[in-house]
Image (cartoon, rainbow, N blue to C red; front, top):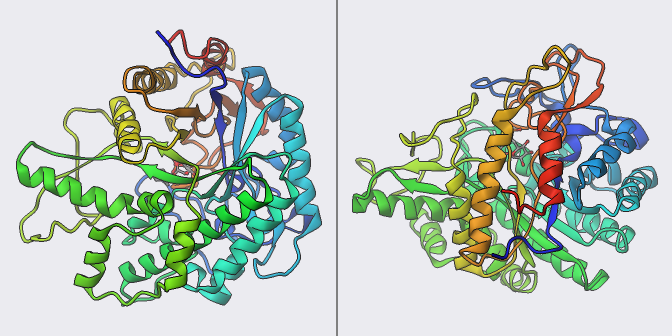
Length: 476
Ligand code: P53
């Protein structure tokens, strides 16, 4: 039986702000990640007004990849990586975000990093905006609630597309653009869009406006990228947590459809180049006044993505509720526990079959190539007496997810480009800012308080994944 393609992109995924550190090196500006303190499960990260003394900002040093990337990439090569997904920190290229000319030291850093990957035949897979936009764009412009951000982003995209046109082929525009569907919490609006809400504001309409500007910026970037190098493959990036109905009661089923509409319309716009009717009807019902011009709508049709990149960690469950005649979805209130699956220590429901379901969902709807650009198990690791982390639980998680992914390819005929497990090396958690929520196949000696030698060591999963890649997943 056929399996994964011969040129399947096995690799790993990270984001600049979660591992680079060097937050002021090479002329880098302050990003939104630089003003977020460490939190914990159930304790949100604090978003401070600039960098304040006496606070713990875990992304400032992270795991010091900025100085250690050569050794780390050597370890990725040893695992057999065919690709490495990271992001370009916007603040290394345009430190404030609104400059006219890029910062040469920042451009040079990524030239060196990509050269190091290419030395081992590792394809860089690059996200343009991964929760690390310039903080200056927040304080001066209000983040993505401002249309001016489109020009700043497109300038950034053009600068890096041009500079790396012969080094990078695979790109994504906005990481997990749909996380901000959860606009009642402060985290996603800030990390996705640099939006800080004022008391009493209608959060939802601001979220739709910011997302619209991002979608226009993404489409312009796709269009520009294809001109700079027609071989570029430029994708979107969606946080996929499929929302199941709690029961087969028809109202529960319809609630799940309505919830999926609210969380995944972003993909429709990226892929099809226009807004789905259900969302336009919703805007009309809510009487949202959005700045969406005729020209914007033209741009959206021109800048459609080449593939769908998505993260998959968990599935969600919803049910119909009283007094909700329109089946409106509120991510902070509409979700319930799935009685059939277990959850991680951070409450993320573990559901490998949900990955097969997600691959089928996307492929049935869009027939575009898919790329699983994040998947993994955040857990507390304890090195044993010999110093090795025996992370059998992580191996089991990944094994079960790869097996379901394989069924989607072999049995269901989904076109899958690759698989890059999240945090292939331990790094700072985005959601909580912790180090102890580890995803890596490589252990990094550093704790939540910032103590540790930063030394790297191979976990048991390192050898396991090396074997998976070597056999192109045939042993799963
Ligand atoms: P952490 C929420 C839901 C799904 C994925 O997350 C998410 C989030 C945000 O926390 O984020 C992605 O570190 C994101 C990465 C992040 C990773 O998943 O909170 O693209 O930056 O680190 C894992 O455990």
